[in-house]
Amino acid sequence: MSPFRSHMDRALAEARAAARRGEVPVGAVVVAPGGRIVAAAGNRTRELADPTAHAEILALRAACAEARSERLPGYDLYVTLEPCPMCASAIGQARIARLYYGAADPKSGGVAHGARVFAHPQSHHVPEVYDGIAEAEAEALLKAFFAPRR
Ligand SMILES: [Zn+2]
Image (tube, rainbow, N blue to C red; front, side, top):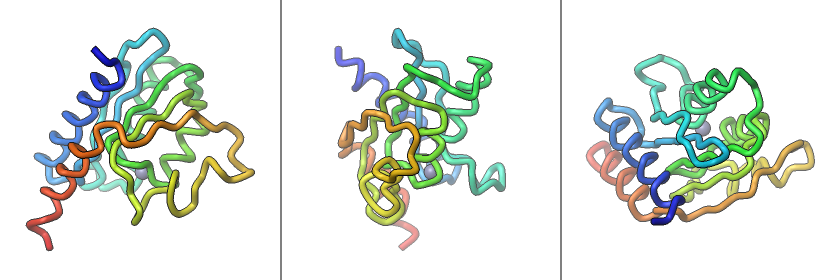
């Protein structure tokens, strides 16, 4: 029944779809105030030949296009992996209210690791952050994706 879990399930489905396309399995979902999913995306950096085509960026772009606004106050973003600094910054720029993420990313994350974008004084907007949501599933997807490549 948990709405947290149901939205992360959709993000995980996007991550699985990304893996099937040969992309790093990360999925993101944007939820409007009231609970409607307005955008869902997985990584498409290879397909689009675009280093900025992370799941969060694609989901934010789609949600902003639907809202006809560059800001999404009151919206929530679910993503299966800790956002990188680029995505964390975009989440702040979009004025996302709550960020829910799954697996921690000590190597490339920018929320709890590395740049810690939201802890920086230059961060004009700081969402509420909830980590570890469906963490085990998100980690398992990433491990399964990278295991054959090692
Ligand atoms: Zn990113």
